[in-house]
Image 1 (cartoon, rainbow, N blue to C red):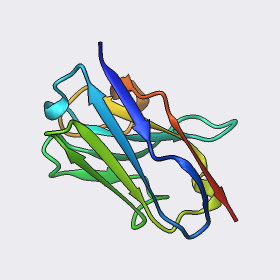
Image 2 (image 1 turned 60 degrees about the vertical axis):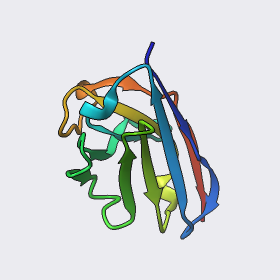
Image 3 (image 1 turned 120 degrees about the vertical axis):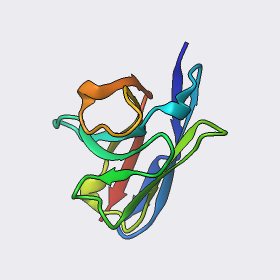
Image 4 (image 1 turned 60 degrees about the horizontal axis):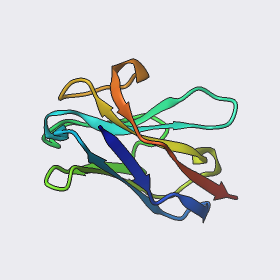
Length: 124
């Protein structure tokens, strides 16, 4: 059984930083792209960032470019999201995602496995 477990969410003030982690078990995800989506109340789940199987290709939503950095550790089967200069509009539930292919995804339709989500709250 595949499990993706996020950690690291919490309450921060605008301008602060936070790092999210996601540990994946039950799957050899070293050959899959991994990434993050987020969902704010009343909104659809949206793409945040993605990283290829070898870490060589990363992509980001325009809203987080220059502030967020995605990385992965294939030995530990983890994906990380470093979030800097957080803004109130970043507040959402963040979901770890394991993609269907090894390079990239930006749509929920291309995700095979999801974490349960971790809440980020940003106060202004």
